[in-house]
Length: 132
Image (cartoon, rainbow, N blue to C red; front, side, top):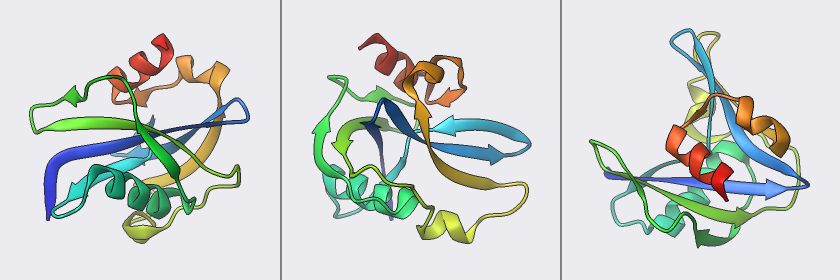
């Protein structure tokens, strides 16, 4: 069972940011890797699990980002910086099982210079990252 907390990863390596390219409901956009914290799981355990599921990469050195969580009607989104060995990400976990032509996920490295022009959710996460 999921809690009302979502965790998201900010992974920067080789002047690139790791994002999930997403298509859903006819809309194409980007999200930070992450997901819901499950009952009995710490936030740090959740972000490491979600990174492995969504990118097949092992996240290390998870550290809190942004000073405070982003609040939503349903809960909060906590961001973590982390480190991974630079490699080609590969989708795994439940998202891989849900892939279809109309609903897909693709982890990708994106040059930092291009993120200002992308539609990235949550918008507040993108804003805070660009302000740093």
